[in-house]
Image (cartoon, rainbow, N blue to C red; front, side, top):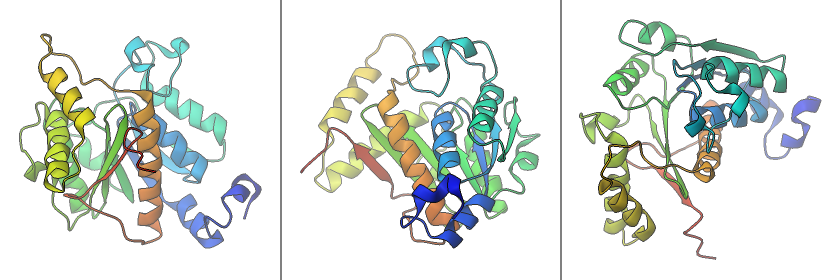
Length: 252
């Protein structure tokens, strides 16, 4: 195994490391995706495409992979530069644009795994999944729940997220409520999340959901593990099942 990844040994077989190195990852959204991208690169994924039309704002710095000096610059461009400093040999492609109906198919084609970290301010995240299904590309959906990270995977033969709700407005909130219903059904209530959801719904202003840096790093770990399982053809859970880890639910 090459020196860069020698500390991956035992955990990762040499032939697996090569599969990881050759896999082409599409990162749609460079907010929470900025943490996932760096985790994936350090793990060994060396072909990453980043697409995001947003510029960095001060409110991003509590949980995303940027600095104050980056404020006002395009996320995709800044993230691509950071990744290239970590591994200059990696193929990092960035597009500082928003994904829309006109460019979505062109952007998706040619990748093996996609991360759908797009904002649900339109129906584009659902369309993104539909096009990925057309090209037989599994899609990772990460969610920042503050003290918890949640990941669900949509494969071409699994249930689509749109079956939870076709309405994109407040979709992240509906996903949190889905997790709560799931927990109550299996007698594993998430009381802390119930409280957060309730307080968020009672806010007088229409604000984005609250998020913490802790969940960003939890989700990055989950996402890269899912990528590893996909490229090495190991089993993993798909929607409507999900991965959820909270630092508030340590039962040891």
